[in-house]
Image 1 (cartoon, rainbow, N blue to C red):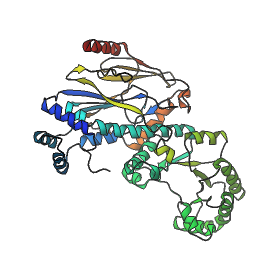
Image 2 (image 1 turned 90 degrees about the vertical axis):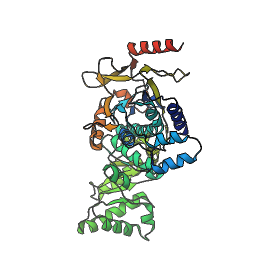
Image 3 (image 1 turned 45 degrees about the horizontal axis):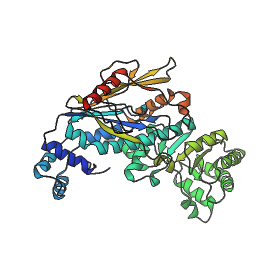
Image 4 (image 1 turned 30 degrees about the vertical axis):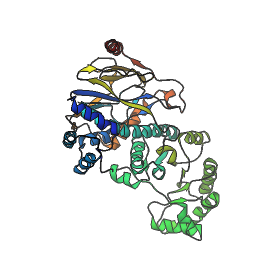
Length: 445
């Protein structure tokens, strides 16, 4: 979606690379991406964005135009510019599969590559993983609250740019949404498309019933009518009156949409009007300021709503618009490394995450361990790229990822499915990793 990827980085990545190049610091480096802490009221996160990261790494190279532009900035020596002209990603990647539930300090991606390559990609890797993981994690909460209701991403118009809007559709579908209104996401990822009509279509007609009729005739296979432009209940009555005429023409009204006011109250009233008019199979779809908290409220009020369009609050992750995440050096030239900054210390070396389940398949605890350590549970990080190329057979269709994410959500303990954080999921650090950190610290002193 963005033509130039190599320049999607921070200046200091390139200035550091110039230092590495000057001093031949090209031995193998290991970086890991993780989240330091959960956003407020979150109990878990859902990994997403790996597919875009791997595509970025596999295709990483500076174009001739980018090289020409870099040479004009005055920041870089000519021999370093020549080095960048030939730079590609040749490393390995281990990662948790997309859709995996994870928790703070657990690495969800590890890059093992010559130092300049591993350093250069930091900014874009964080950019891709942070955003989709943020959206997928929020979308999963709506999925848990909605049960078997239809959920559609409606947020493109309020997303922070085109790429964000399209990737939000992907992340929400991965997390369990039914589809999106964003047409480009349908083309790019094969996500099912949903759409109804806008108030402007109704306003453009002198008569609301005429607007409904014309829309139905133009879209006979997708007749979902927006009925709250003027008076919601009156709009429902007009739908009942119009139904026999459409039926005679072989057109069935699929649903009505509510977009304003007290959606639960209107839904109860509209359901009664439709049922009394013999339209029991006509569904009610609601949109307008909806998020997981509203879904929980609708459920408590037993609102007869069959599906929801969720937009602004999802695509901007309005209640938690960022995560405290990081991509940190864990090893260089075979030596474990550790950041010890106050409040931002890291666990050194290559790591693996093991997950344990009870007899019913419910998650009961994770262990963060040294990579070659054997612990109880299922190891979560897998090799997905070697020598700069994605491993054949590791790519998964988005539909399969979506189904596997649902399996993940079913393994969550009950308290983690709530919208408030009642307790923290147990994540322990292995003794071997603690001892490694101690040895690294002693080496610094």
